[in-house]
Image (cartoon, rainbow, N blue to C red; front, side, top):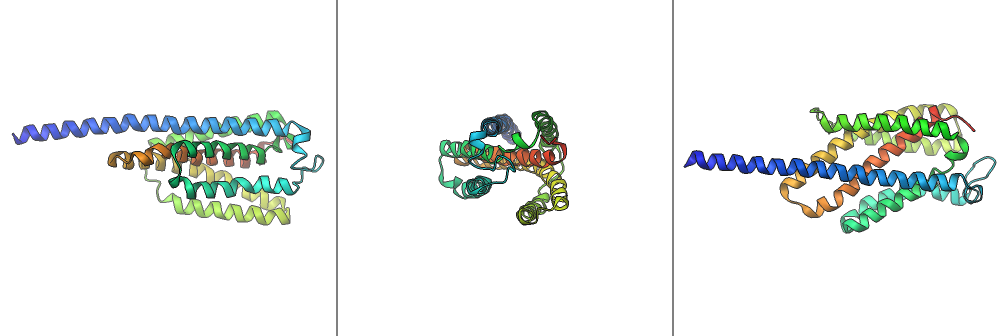
Length: 247
């Protein structure tokens, strides 16, 4: 009887593990799907504004590309938005969270629309392709590696805070040397975050799925998509400083 009960327990555990594995694959597909839609929305808004002089002139000087008052708002709005979104997502429905993510992606497109005037279309496309290849490799490694990356979190977030401070300071200093160093560090930090965030999203799903936390699962794909979206878009923007050919 004891052996029979043990076999039943093992079979039930195996079934539960298989269900979680299938759910994890579906969850990750949803994360990448939402992220991809967000990237397309960002690209569409950025291209539409950046290739329409009348629209771009609302935010930047057509000759120097220096931001005006609305341009500064557009630059900092995504940063404010993402912190507000992270703080309020627990009080949102899954549908509202998804809508907020798409709104953020559109706002980010507005913020980076100037790149279509500053850099050639070919260099933007090439940088995007390199970023996509690097992102795919790093995310795949983060998903499959047995190495625990949780220790990277604090170090990488400190790096992000340092980057933000350095970039704000350089708005006033306009130092090419500082921008060069920031760009190198930015690529490395967001490359590390891509692997770290992918593993975190995977581990968090397994933890919550095992406890049956359906409310969290309904919104977590959107939050995961936001995290990976930010890793991709930041890595792309920093790489563009090296690979972008001036118009």
